[in-house]
Length: 88
Image (cartoon, rainbow, N blue to C red; front, top):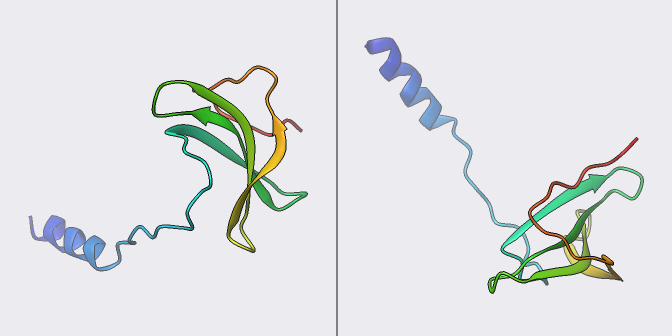
């Protein structure tokens, strides 16, 4: 029991805390992003809105400048509830 208590207290001491990042420009409730190493940016291929509609606007996050922006393109057929991935 003492070992369990020791490791529990140790985990609390070294636990990481959540830190919020910058505000996004989109209002998606469900979305997924993928980091693309060649551009060093994260892309979001649309997402689901609070009213359960799907928005196909493609967004980008630049980790260096901490900014989100639309790329000016949308998915031809908006889809949500998926996982984005890089094909190599």
